[in-house]
Amino acid sequence: MKSYREYIDPVRIYGNWSEIGAPSWSTDKFTITPEGVMSESRFISSSFDFDGAAVSFTTGGELYEYQVLGANNERLKRVAGGGHAASFIKEGFEHTLPTEDNAGAARRVSLAEHFQSKK
Image 1 (cartoon, helix red, strand yellow):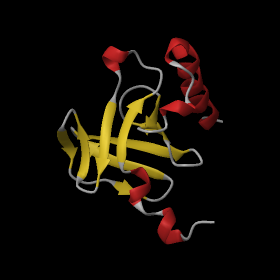
Image 2 (tube, rainbow, N blue to C red):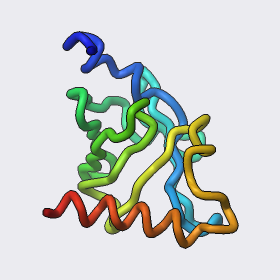
Image 3 (spheres, rainbow, N blue to C red):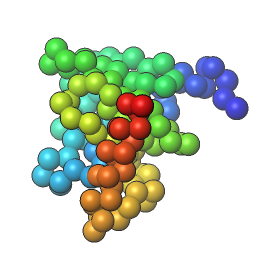
Image 4 (cartoon, rainbow, N blue to C red):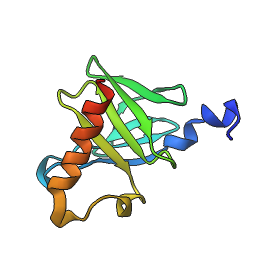
């Protein structure tokens, strides 16, 4: 069992994140660091909020919010911002997803997670 201090420690979400099941030419990717959130080697937000269950930041005047999922905090599900439902996997945990040649299954997993949260 984690202590509250461990639960809210943002070190759990630091790293590179890639969208699951998106075509390679339009995969959303970003990096969370102690200094903020980066995309395409540029800072898009100099700060973020993390409460242990969700991470959020504002960029371009739009709030983005992600729910933290997985036993190892290896997945994020976008619940606000970005225009479409999407799930993300942390770099180093890609092996936990279906293989590339089964990209449709990965997208179905992402969509299933999205709709289960709507219940």
